[in-house]
Amino acid sequence: MQAVNEVRNKPRKRKTFRMPGAFVILFILTILAVIATWTIPSGSYSKLSYESSSSELKIVNPHGDVSKVPATQKELDKLGVKIDIKQFKSGSISSAVSVPNTYERLKQHPAGIQAIPNSMVNGTIQAVDIMVFILVLGGLIGVVKASGAFESGLMALTKKTKGHEFVLIMLVTILMMLGGTLCGIEEEAVAFYPILVPVFIAMGYDSIVSVGAIFLASSVGTTFSTINPFSAVIASNAAGTNFTQGLNFRIFGLIVAGICLIIYLHWYSKKVKNNPEFSYSYDDHEEFDNMWSVADEKDKEKNIFTNRKKLILVLFVVTFPIMVWGVMSQGWWFPTMASSFLTFAIIIMFLTATGKNGIGEKGVVDAFVNGASSLVGVSLIIGLARGINIILNDGLISDTILHFFSQMVTNVSGPVFIILMMFIFFILGFIVPSSSGLAVLSMPILAPLADTANVPRFAVVSAYQFGQYAMLFLAPTGLVMATLQMLNMKYSHWVRFVWPVVVFVLVFGGVILVAEVLI
Image 1 (cartoon, rainbow, N blue to C red):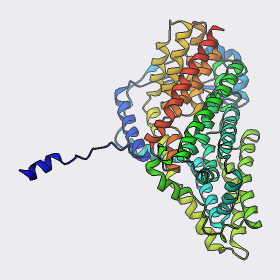
Image 2: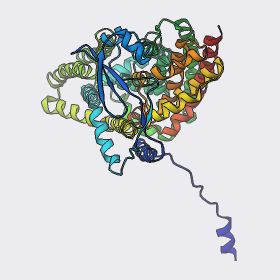
Image 3: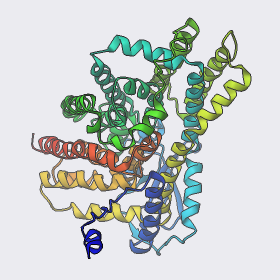
Image 4: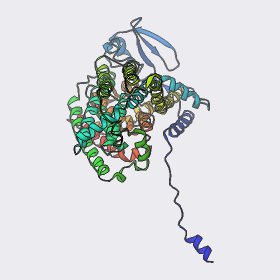
Protein backbone atom coordinates (compact mmCIF):
# COMPACT_ATOMS: atom_id res chain seq x y z
CA MET A 1 0.00 0.00 0.00
CA GLN A 2 2.85 2.35 0.87
CA ALA A 3 4.52 1.55 -2.46
CA VAL A 4 1.29 2.39 -4.32
CA ASN A 5 1.02 5.75 -2.54
CA GLU A 6 4.66 6.52 -3.37
CA VAL A 7 3.92 5.89 -7.04
CA ARG A 8 0.82 8.11 -6.90
CA ASN A 9 2.64 10.93 -5.11
CA LYS A 10 5.64 10.81 -7.45
CA PRO A 11 5.74 14.08 -9.42
CA ARG A 12 4.95 13.66 -13.08
CA LYS A 13 7.30 14.99 -15.69
CA ARG A 14 5.69 17.72 -17.72
CA LYS A 15 5.63 17.20 -21.44
CA THR A 16 7.00 20.41 -22.90
CA PHE A 17 6.52 21.30 -26.54
CA ARG A 18 9.80 21.78 -28.35
CA MET A 19 9.71 23.99 -31.42
CA PRO A 20 11.20 22.08 -34.37
CA GLY A 21 14.33 23.37 -36.06
CA ALA A 22 14.56 25.51 -39.18
CA PHE A 23 14.76 22.61 -41.63
CA VAL A 24 11.71 20.86 -40.16
CA ILE A 25 9.66 24.08 -40.12
CA LEU A 26 10.43 24.73 -43.79
CA PHE A 27 9.68 21.10 -44.67
CA ILE A 28 6.26 21.39 -42.98
CA LEU A 29 5.57 24.66 -44.82
CA THR A 30 6.55 23.00 -48.11
CA ILE A 31 3.93 20.28 -47.48
CA LEU A 32 1.32 22.92 -46.59
CA ALA A 33 2.13 24.79 -49.81
CA VAL A 34 1.46 21.60 -51.78
CA ILE A 35 -1.87 21.15 -49.98
CA ALA A 36 -2.76 24.78 -50.76
CA THR A 37 -2.41 24.12 -54.49
CA TRP A 38 -5.22 21.54 -54.13
CA THR A 39 -7.57 23.75 -52.10
CA ILE A 40 -7.08 27.30 -53.48
CA PRO A 41 -8.42 27.89 -57.03
CA SER A 42 -5.80 28.46 -59.72
CA GLY A 43 -5.79 31.73 -61.63
CA SER A 44 -3.53 34.33 -63.10
CA TYR A 45 -3.21 37.91 -64.30
CA SER A 46 -1.62 38.75 -67.64
CA LYS A 47 2.03 39.61 -67.19
CA LEU A 48 3.81 42.52 -68.87
CA SER A 49 7.55 42.85 -69.46
CA TYR A 50 9.90 44.94 -71.58
CA GLU A 51 12.19 43.47 -74.26
CA SER A 52 15.16 45.75 -74.81
CA SER A 53 16.30 43.85 -77.91
CA SER A 54 13.16 44.80 -79.87
CA SER A 55 12.05 47.82 -77.78
CA GLU A 56 8.64 46.19 -77.37
CA LEU A 57 6.34 45.29 -74.50
CA LYS A 58 5.64 41.57 -74.22
CA ILE A 59 2.27 40.52 -72.81
CA VAL A 60 1.68 36.95 -71.66
CA ASN A 61 -2.00 36.27 -70.99
CA PRO A 62 -3.20 33.83 -68.30
CA HIS A 63 -3.27 30.99 -70.87
CA GLY A 64 0.33 31.57 -71.92
CA ASP A 65 -0.35 33.26 -75.22
CA VAL A 66 2.20 35.94 -76.09
CA SER A 67 1.59 39.25 -77.83
CA LYS A 68 3.81 42.26 -78.36
CA VAL A 69 3.04 45.98 -78.65
CA PRO A 70 5.24 49.06 -79.09
CA ALA A 71 6.92 50.24 -75.89
CA THR A 72 5.04 53.53 -75.60
CA GLN A 73 3.18 55.31 -72.82
CA LYS A 74 0.02 55.13 -74.95
CA GLU A 75 0.10 51.32 -74.94
CA LEU A 76 0.63 51.23 -71.17
CA ASP A 77 -2.36 53.55 -70.69
CA LYS A 78 -4.50 51.23 -72.84
CA LEU A 79 -3.56 48.33 -70.58
CA GLY A 80 -4.36 50.35 -67.46
CA VAL A 81 -0.77 50.11 -66.24
CA LYS A 82 -0.10 53.52 -64.66
CA ILE A 83 3.69 53.30 -64.82
CA ASP A 84 6.01 55.63 -66.69
CA ILE A 85 7.41 53.82 -69.75
CA LYS A 86 10.84 55.21 -68.81
CA GLN A 87 10.85 52.90 -65.78
CA PHE A 88 10.79 49.88 -68.12
CA LYS A 89 13.32 51.24 -70.61
CA SER A 90 15.81 52.30 -67.94
CA GLY A 91 15.72 48.88 -66.28
CA SER A 92 14.24 50.20 -63.01
CA ILE A 93 11.48 47.62 -63.47
CA SER A 94 12.93 44.43 -64.88
CA SER A 95 10.51 41.80 -63.57
CA ALA A 96 7.15 40.97 -65.13
CA VAL A 97 4.33 43.27 -63.98
CA SER A 98 0.72 42.19 -63.36
CA VAL A 99 -1.81 43.82 -65.72
CA PRO A 100 -4.95 45.14 -63.93
CA ASN A 101 -8.40 43.67 -64.71
CA THR A 102 -6.99 40.63 -66.51
CA TYR A 103 -7.41 37.97 -63.81
CA GLU A 104 -8.86 34.67 -65.04
CA ARG A 105 -9.65 31.43 -63.27
CA LEU A 106 -7.65 28.57 -64.75
CA LYS A 107 -7.68 24.81 -64.65
CA GLN A 108 -6.43 23.61 -61.28
CA HIS A 109 -2.67 22.99 -61.11
CA PRO A 110 -2.31 20.84 -57.98
CA ALA A 111 1.22 19.89 -57.00
CA GLY A 112 2.06 16.23 -56.59
CA ILE A 113 4.15 14.59 -53.87
CA GLN A 114 7.19 14.90 -56.14
CA ALA A 115 6.89 18.69 -55.95
CA ILE A 116 8.29 18.57 -52.39
CA PRO A 117 11.82 17.34 -53.28
CA ASN A 118 11.71 19.08 -56.69
CA SER A 119 10.98 22.48 -55.13
CA MET A 120 13.79 22.00 -52.63
CA VAL A 121 16.27 21.30 -55.42
CA ASN A 122 15.01 24.06 -57.72
CA GLY A 123 14.84 26.59 -54.90
CA THR A 124 18.43 25.79 -54.02
CA ILE A 125 19.44 26.27 -57.67
CA GLN A 126 17.68 29.64 -57.76
CA ALA A 127 19.51 30.76 -54.62
CA VAL A 128 22.95 29.59 -55.77
CA ASP A 129 24.36 33.15 -55.99
CA ILE A 130 23.52 33.86 -52.36
CA MET A 131 24.74 30.41 -51.31
CA VAL A 132 28.14 30.88 -52.95
CA PHE A 133 28.45 34.28 -51.23
CA ILE A 134 27.71 32.69 -47.84
CA LEU A 135 30.16 29.83 -48.39
CA VAL A 136 32.95 32.24 -49.39
CA LEU A 137 32.12 34.32 -46.33
CA GLY A 138 32.39 31.19 -44.16
CA GLY A 139 35.77 30.37 -45.70
CA LEU A 140 37.03 33.89 -45.02
CA ILE A 141 35.92 33.62 -41.39
CA GLY A 142 37.66 30.27 -41.03
CA VAL A 143 40.98 31.65 -42.25
CA VAL A 144 40.83 34.74 -40.01
CA LYS A 145 40.04 32.54 -37.00
CA ALA A 146 42.98 30.28 -37.84
CA SER A 147 45.30 33.29 -37.93
CA GLY A 148 44.50 34.14 -34.29
CA ALA A 149 43.67 37.74 -35.25
CA PHE A 150 40.13 37.46 -33.89
CA GLU A 151 41.23 36.52 -30.37
CA SER A 152 43.90 39.22 -30.14
CA GLY A 153 41.67 41.93 -31.57
CA LEU A 154 38.77 41.08 -29.29
CA MET A 155 40.92 41.13 -26.18
CA ALA A 156 42.13 44.61 -27.10
CA LEU A 157 38.63 45.84 -27.96
CA THR A 158 36.90 44.56 -24.82
CA LYS A 159 39.48 46.27 -22.60
CA LYS A 160 38.88 49.63 -24.32
CA THR A 161 35.07 49.40 -24.29
CA LYS A 162 34.68 48.13 -20.72
CA GLY A 163 31.81 50.00 -19.05
CA HIS A 164 30.53 51.42 -22.36
CA GLU A 165 29.52 48.21 -24.12
CA PHE A 166 26.07 49.34 -25.24
CA VAL A 167 27.55 52.25 -27.21
CA LEU A 168 28.78 49.72 -29.78
CA ILE A 169 25.33 48.05 -29.90
CA MET A 170 23.73 51.44 -30.52
CA LEU A 171 26.20 52.40 -33.26
CA VAL A 172 25.73 49.07 -35.05
CA THR A 173 21.94 49.43 -34.79
CA ILE A 174 22.02 52.93 -36.29
CA LEU A 175 24.36 51.90 -39.11
CA MET A 176 22.27 48.84 -39.97
CA MET A 177 19.08 50.91 -39.98
CA LEU A 178 20.71 53.40 -42.34
CA GLY A 179 21.80 50.53 -44.58
CA GLY A 180 18.24 49.20 -44.63
CA THR A 181 16.52 52.52 -45.36
CA LEU A 182 19.06 53.67 -47.97
CA CYS A 183 19.96 50.54 -49.93
CA GLY A 184 17.89 47.68 -48.51
CA ILE A 185 20.59 45.62 -46.79
CA GLU A 186 18.90 42.27 -46.03
CA GLU A 187 20.66 39.09 -47.18
CA GLU A 188 23.91 41.05 -47.11
CA ALA A 189 23.49 41.48 -43.35
CA VAL A 190 24.65 37.88 -42.77
CA ALA A 191 28.16 39.10 -43.59
CA PHE A 192 28.22 41.20 -40.41
CA TYR A 193 27.58 38.37 -37.93
CA PRO A 194 31.09 36.88 -38.03
CA ILE A 195 32.76 40.18 -37.17
CA LEU A 196 30.22 41.44 -34.61
CA VAL A 197 28.84 38.38 -32.81
CA PRO A 198 32.16 37.43 -31.15
CA VAL A 199 32.44 41.05 -29.98
CA PHE A 200 28.94 40.97 -28.46
CA ILE A 201 29.72 37.67 -26.70
CA ALA A 202 32.92 39.10 -25.24
CA MET A 203 30.89 42.02 -23.90
CA GLY A 204 28.46 39.69 -22.11
CA TYR A 205 25.50 39.74 -24.51
CA ASP A 206 23.54 36.87 -26.08
CA SER A 207 22.41 35.72 -29.52
CA ILE A 208 19.18 37.76 -29.31
CA VAL A 209 21.13 41.02 -28.99
CA SER A 210 23.25 39.97 -31.98
CA VAL A 211 20.25 39.38 -34.23
CA GLY A 212 18.45 42.44 -32.88
CA ALA A 213 21.33 44.83 -33.63
CA ILE A 214 21.97 43.41 -37.11
CA PHE A 215 18.98 41.68 -38.73
CA LEU A 216 16.20 43.46 -36.86
CA ALA A 217 17.83 46.88 -37.16
CA SER A 218 18.38 46.55 -40.92
CA SER A 219 14.81 45.26 -41.33
CA VAL A 220 13.35 48.17 -39.35
CA GLY A 221 15.34 50.49 -41.62
CA THR A 222 13.88 48.76 -44.67
CA THR A 223 10.39 48.94 -43.14
CA PHE A 224 10.69 52.71 -43.20
CA SER A 225 12.58 52.85 -46.49
CA THR A 226 13.37 56.35 -47.68
CA ILE A 227 15.36 55.95 -50.92
CA ASN A 228 15.84 52.16 -50.89
CA PRO A 229 15.72 51.22 -54.61
CA PHE A 230 14.52 47.67 -53.87
CA SER A 231 11.52 48.78 -51.81
CA ALA A 232 10.36 52.41 -51.77
CA VAL A 233 11.59 53.30 -55.26
CA ILE A 234 10.50 50.21 -57.18
CA ALA A 235 7.14 50.07 -55.36
CA SER A 236 6.51 53.75 -56.10
CA ASN A 237 7.38 53.20 -59.76
CA ALA A 238 5.04 50.21 -59.98
CA ALA A 239 2.28 52.19 -58.23
CA GLY A 240 2.56 55.04 -60.73
CA THR A 241 3.80 57.60 -58.21
CA ASN A 242 7.12 59.22 -57.25
CA PHE A 243 9.11 57.84 -54.31
CA THR A 244 9.58 61.38 -52.93
CA GLN A 245 5.85 61.54 -52.19
CA GLY A 246 5.26 60.57 -48.58
CA LEU A 247 9.01 60.75 -47.91
CA ASN A 248 8.52 63.09 -44.94
CA PHE A 249 6.18 60.58 -43.28
CA ARG A 250 8.68 57.74 -43.79
CA ILE A 251 11.59 59.80 -42.42
CA PHE A 252 9.53 60.66 -39.34
CA GLY A 253 8.60 56.99 -38.93
CA LEU A 254 12.24 55.93 -39.29
CA ILE A 255 13.39 58.31 -36.54
CA VAL A 256 10.67 57.26 -34.10
CA ALA A 257 11.10 53.54 -34.87
CA GLY A 258 14.89 53.84 -34.49
CA ILE A 259 14.60 55.47 -31.08
CA CYS A 260 12.11 52.84 -29.91
CA LEU A 261 14.28 49.98 -31.17
CA ILE A 262 17.38 51.32 -29.40
CA ILE A 263 15.39 51.70 -26.16
CA TYR A 264 14.09 48.13 -26.50
CA LEU A 265 17.58 46.74 -27.19
CA HIS A 266 19.01 48.74 -24.27
CA TRP A 267 16.37 47.34 -21.89
CA TYR A 268 16.94 43.77 -23.03
CA SER A 269 20.76 43.91 -23.21
CA LYS A 270 20.95 45.49 -19.74
CA LYS A 271 18.80 42.69 -18.33
CA VAL A 272 21.03 40.04 -19.94
CA LYS A 273 24.20 41.80 -18.82
CA ASN A 274 23.02 41.90 -15.18
CA ASN A 275 21.53 38.40 -15.21
CA PRO A 276 22.55 36.04 -18.06
CA GLU A 277 19.70 33.67 -17.13
CA PHE A 278 17.22 36.37 -18.20
CA SER A 279 18.23 35.71 -21.80
CA TYR A 280 15.38 34.36 -23.94
CA SER A 281 17.91 32.02 -25.56
CA TYR A 282 19.66 31.00 -22.33
CA ASP A 283 18.83 27.32 -22.97
CA ASP A 284 21.29 27.33 -25.86
CA HIS A 285 23.86 29.82 -24.59
CA GLU A 286 26.64 27.29 -24.06
CA GLU A 287 26.38 25.92 -27.60
CA PHE A 288 26.13 29.47 -28.98
CA ASP A 289 29.19 30.63 -27.05
CA ASN A 290 31.20 27.59 -28.14
CA MET A 291 30.27 28.26 -31.76
CA TRP A 292 31.05 31.99 -31.84
CA SER A 293 33.29 32.86 -28.89
CA VAL A 294 36.93 33.20 -29.96
CA ALA A 295 38.59 35.03 -27.04
CA ASP A 296 40.72 33.06 -24.63
CA GLU A 297 42.16 35.19 -21.84
CA LYS A 298 44.26 32.36 -20.41
CA ASP A 299 46.58 32.02 -23.41
CA LYS A 300 48.35 35.38 -23.19
CA GLU A 301 51.05 34.49 -25.69
CA LYS A 302 48.48 33.52 -28.27
CA ASN A 303 46.59 36.80 -27.72
CA ILE A 304 49.55 39.09 -28.42
CA PHE A 305 48.26 41.57 -31.00
CA THR A 306 51.13 41.46 -33.51
CA ASN A 307 51.41 43.70 -36.55
CA ARG A 308 50.62 40.75 -38.79
CA LYS A 309 47.39 40.08 -36.87
CA LYS A 310 46.49 43.78 -36.99
CA LEU A 311 46.94 43.76 -40.77
CA ILE A 312 44.81 40.61 -41.14
CA LEU A 313 42.05 42.10 -39.00
CA VAL A 314 42.14 45.37 -40.95
CA LEU A 315 41.86 43.46 -44.24
CA PHE A 316 38.95 41.45 -42.83
CA VAL A 317 37.09 44.51 -41.56
CA VAL A 318 37.63 46.59 -44.70
CA THR A 319 35.77 44.02 -46.83
CA PHE A 320 32.46 45.16 -45.29
CA PRO A 321 32.52 48.89 -46.10
CA ILE A 322 33.74 47.95 -49.58
CA MET A 323 30.71 45.64 -49.91
CA VAL A 324 28.32 48.41 -48.79
CA TRP A 325 29.96 50.87 -51.21
CA GLY A 326 29.66 48.37 -54.05
CA VAL A 327 25.98 47.67 -53.37
CA MET A 328 25.02 51.33 -52.98
CA SER A 329 27.01 52.96 -55.78
CA GLN A 330 28.24 50.27 -58.17
CA GLY A 331 25.21 47.97 -58.37
CA TRP A 332 27.05 44.94 -57.00
CA TRP A 333 25.12 41.74 -56.50
CA PHE A 334 26.08 38.50 -54.78
CA PRO A 335 28.53 37.13 -57.40
CA THR A 336 30.55 40.37 -57.30
CA MET A 337 30.39 40.52 -53.50
CA ALA A 338 31.55 36.89 -53.31
CA SER A 339 34.48 37.69 -55.63
CA SER A 340 35.41 40.67 -53.44
CA PHE A 341 35.37 38.54 -50.28
CA LEU A 342 37.34 35.77 -52.01
CA THR A 343 40.02 38.26 -53.05
CA PHE A 344 40.58 39.33 -49.45
CA ALA A 345 40.41 35.70 -48.30
CA ILE A 346 43.27 34.78 -50.64
CA ILE A 347 45.42 37.68 -49.36
CA ILE A 348 44.71 36.70 -45.73
CA MET A 349 45.43 33.03 -46.52
CA PHE A 350 48.87 34.03 -47.83
CA LEU A 351 49.62 36.09 -44.71
CA THR A 352 48.40 33.29 -42.42
CA ALA A 353 50.28 30.51 -44.22
CA THR A 354 53.69 32.18 -44.38
CA GLY A 355 56.05 33.70 -41.83
CA LYS A 356 57.38 32.60 -38.45
CA ASN A 357 54.07 31.41 -37.00
CA GLY A 358 52.43 30.51 -40.31
CA ILE A 359 50.25 27.43 -40.49
CA GLY A 360 51.25 26.47 -44.03
CA GLU A 361 49.35 25.85 -47.24
CA LYS A 362 47.39 22.85 -45.94
CA GLY A 363 46.48 24.70 -42.75
CA VAL A 364 44.91 27.68 -44.50
CA VAL A 365 43.11 25.52 -47.08
CA ASP A 366 41.65 23.34 -44.31
CA ALA A 367 40.65 26.48 -42.40
CA PHE A 368 38.86 27.87 -45.47
CA VAL A 369 37.06 24.58 -46.16
CA ASN A 370 36.03 24.13 -42.52
CA GLY A 371 34.77 27.71 -42.35
CA ALA A 372 32.72 27.27 -45.51
CA SER A 373 31.30 23.93 -44.32
CA SER A 374 30.10 25.55 -41.07
CA LEU A 375 27.68 27.70 -43.11
CA VAL A 376 26.36 25.00 -45.47
CA GLY A 377 23.21 24.68 -43.35
CA VAL A 378 22.59 28.43 -43.55
CA SER A 379 22.90 28.49 -47.34
CA LEU A 380 20.59 25.48 -47.74
CA ILE A 381 17.93 27.17 -45.62
CA ILE A 382 17.71 30.02 -48.15
CA GLY A 383 17.24 27.54 -50.98
CA LEU A 384 14.52 25.61 -49.14
CA ALA A 385 12.60 28.82 -48.43
CA ARG A 386 12.71 29.66 -52.15
CA GLY A 387 11.21 26.25 -52.89
CA ILE A 388 7.98 27.15 -51.06
CA ASN A 389 7.47 30.15 -53.35
CA ILE A 390 8.10 27.96 -56.39
CA ILE A 391 5.27 25.62 -55.38
CA LEU A 392 2.83 28.51 -54.87
CA ASN A 393 3.75 30.08 -58.20
CA ASP A 394 3.66 26.82 -60.16
CA GLY A 395 0.29 26.04 -58.59
CA LEU A 396 -1.00 29.41 -59.92
CA ILE A 397 -2.53 30.37 -56.58
CA SER A 398 -0.49 33.49 -55.73
CA ASP A 399 -2.48 35.62 -58.18
CA THR A 400 -5.74 34.13 -56.90
CA ILE A 401 -4.90 35.29 -53.38
CA LEU A 402 -3.96 38.74 -54.74
CA HIS A 403 -7.24 38.94 -56.68
CA PHE A 404 -9.24 37.96 -53.59
CA PHE A 405 -7.65 40.74 -51.56
CA SER A 406 -8.23 43.30 -54.31
CA GLN A 407 -11.96 42.53 -54.12
CA MET A 408 -11.92 42.87 -50.34
CA VAL A 409 -10.92 46.54 -50.30
CA THR A 410 -13.48 47.90 -52.75
CA ASN A 411 -16.20 50.31 -51.58
CA VAL A 412 -14.67 51.18 -48.20
CA SER A 413 -13.68 54.53 -46.70
CA GLY A 414 -10.13 55.88 -46.98
CA PRO A 415 -8.85 55.08 -43.45
CA VAL A 416 -10.41 51.60 -43.49
CA PHE A 417 -9.03 51.01 -47.01
CA ILE A 418 -5.45 51.83 -46.08
CA ILE A 419 -5.47 49.79 -42.84
CA LEU A 420 -6.90 46.81 -44.70
CA MET A 421 -4.22 47.31 -47.33
CA MET A 422 -1.48 47.10 -44.70
CA PHE A 423 -2.83 43.79 -43.40
CA ILE A 424 -3.17 42.50 -46.96
CA PHE A 425 0.52 43.18 -47.53
CA PHE A 426 1.22 41.58 -44.14
CA ILE A 427 -0.27 38.32 -45.44
CA LEU A 428 1.22 38.65 -48.93
CA GLY A 429 4.63 39.13 -47.31
CA PHE A 430 4.52 35.50 -46.22
CA ILE A 431 3.66 34.30 -49.74
CA VAL A 432 6.09 36.60 -51.61
CA PRO A 433 8.96 37.47 -49.23
CA SER A 434 10.90 39.40 -51.88
CA SER A 435 10.29 43.16 -51.50
CA SER A 436 10.86 43.96 -55.17
CA GLY A 437 8.98 40.83 -56.27
CA LEU A 438 5.90 41.70 -54.24
CA ALA A 439 6.03 45.31 -55.48
CA VAL A 440 5.88 44.50 -59.19
CA LEU A 441 3.31 41.74 -58.73
CA SER A 442 0.86 43.58 -56.49
CA MET A 443 1.25 47.33 -56.99
CA PRO A 444 -0.23 47.52 -60.52
CA ILE A 445 -3.31 45.72 -59.16
CA LEU A 446 -3.75 47.28 -55.71
CA ALA A 447 -2.47 50.85 -56.20
CA PRO A 448 -5.20 51.90 -58.69
CA LEU A 449 -7.83 50.85 -56.13
CA ALA A 450 -6.61 53.77 -53.99
CA ASP A 451 -8.10 56.17 -56.54
CA THR A 452 -11.60 54.81 -55.91
CA ALA A 453 -11.21 55.38 -52.16
CA ASN A 454 -9.70 58.89 -52.55
CA VAL A 455 -6.44 57.66 -51.04
CA PRO A 456 -3.06 58.91 -52.36
CA ARG A 457 -1.10 56.15 -54.04
CA PHE A 458 2.01 56.87 -52.00
CA ALA A 459 0.01 55.74 -48.95
CA VAL A 460 -0.35 52.31 -50.58
CA VAL A 461 3.44 52.21 -50.95
CA SER A 462 3.77 52.92 -47.22
CA ALA A 463 1.18 50.21 -46.44
CA TYR A 464 3.20 47.78 -48.55
CA GLN A 465 6.38 48.57 -46.60
CA PHE A 466 4.83 48.42 -43.13
CA GLY A 467 2.76 45.31 -43.81
CA GLN A 468 5.32 43.21 -45.65
CA TYR A 469 8.18 43.88 -43.28
CA ALA A 470 6.12 43.35 -40.15
CA MET A 471 5.61 39.85 -41.57
CA LEU A 472 9.25 39.40 -42.62
CA PHE A 473 10.35 39.83 -39.00
CA LEU A 474 8.59 36.50 -38.48
CA ALA A 475 8.08 34.71 -41.83
CA PRO A 476 10.00 31.43 -42.16
CA THR A 477 9.83 31.93 -45.94
CA GLY A 478 12.10 34.99 -45.63
CA LEU A 479 15.58 35.52 -44.22
CA VAL A 480 14.68 34.79 -40.59
CA MET A 481 15.33 31.06 -40.70
CA ALA A 482 18.76 31.45 -42.33
CA THR A 483 19.71 33.99 -39.66
CA LEU A 484 18.55 31.75 -36.81
CA GLN A 485 20.27 28.74 -38.33
CA MET A 486 23.50 30.71 -38.55
CA LEU A 487 23.37 31.52 -34.83
CA ASN A 488 21.81 28.21 -33.79
CA MET A 489 18.82 30.02 -32.25
CA LYS A 490 15.38 28.48 -31.79
CA TYR A 491 12.55 30.11 -33.72
CA SER A 492 10.41 30.25 -30.56
CA HIS A 493 13.11 32.26 -28.75
CA TRP A 494 13.21 34.79 -31.58
CA VAL A 495 9.42 35.12 -31.73
CA ARG A 496 9.33 35.82 -27.99
CA PHE A 497 11.69 38.77 -28.51
CA VAL A 498 10.41 40.17 -31.80
CA TRP A 499 6.61 40.07 -31.40
CA PRO A 500 6.47 43.47 -29.60
CA VAL A 501 8.33 44.98 -32.57
CA VAL A 502 5.80 43.46 -34.99
CA VAL A 503 2.91 44.93 -32.98
CA PHE A 504 4.69 48.30 -32.83
CA VAL A 505 5.16 48.41 -36.62
CA LEU A 506 1.52 47.53 -37.29
CA VAL A 507 0.12 49.99 -34.74
CA PHE A 508 2.54 52.86 -35.36
CA GLY A 509 2.48 52.17 -39.10
CA GLY A 510 -1.33 52.25 -39.02
CA VAL A 511 -1.26 55.67 -37.36
CA ILE A 512 1.09 57.00 -40.06
CA LEU A 513 -1.10 55.54 -42.81
CA VAL A 514 -4.26 57.18 -41.46
CA ALA A 515 -2.35 60.47 -41.20
CA GLU A 516 -1.25 60.12 -44.85
CA VAL A 517 -4.87 59.66 -45.87
CA LEU A 518 -6.41 62.45 -43.77
CA ILE A 519 -3.73 65.16 -43.84
